[in-house]
Image 1 (cartoon, rainbow, N blue to C red):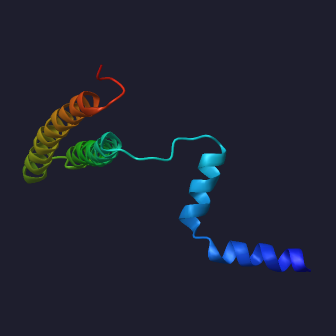
Image 2 (cartoon, one colour):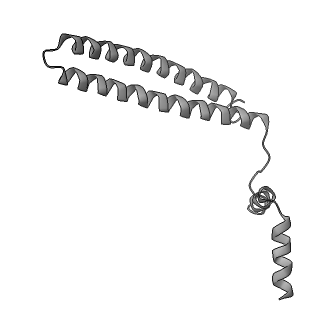
Image 3 (cartoon, helix red, strand yellow):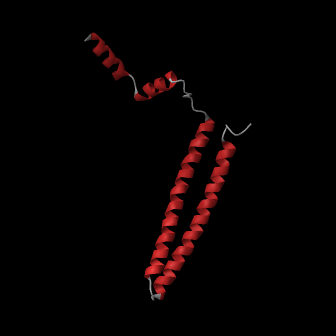
Length: 115
């Protein structure tokens, strides 16, 4: 009974972050975060965000194709679908160029690849 009350007291006073840090240290992981790691984290977040935007533009392109397919003889719907398709291709090109710039900067700023 004394053992259970001692362990519950110890767990209640420990913060979740310190418990995670202790677990990482006992597994011999490096738990320190340097400025280079923040660059990597920000770069990965930007890459993830740009990937989501790229998926949205591809879905818009597919929707524009579907709209064009279902337009039949309606010239106004065909023109709307063409404009949407053109705008989605432009947006996809902008997103791919931003993704490639981010990828280059992520490699350039990464500590592991700079000698």
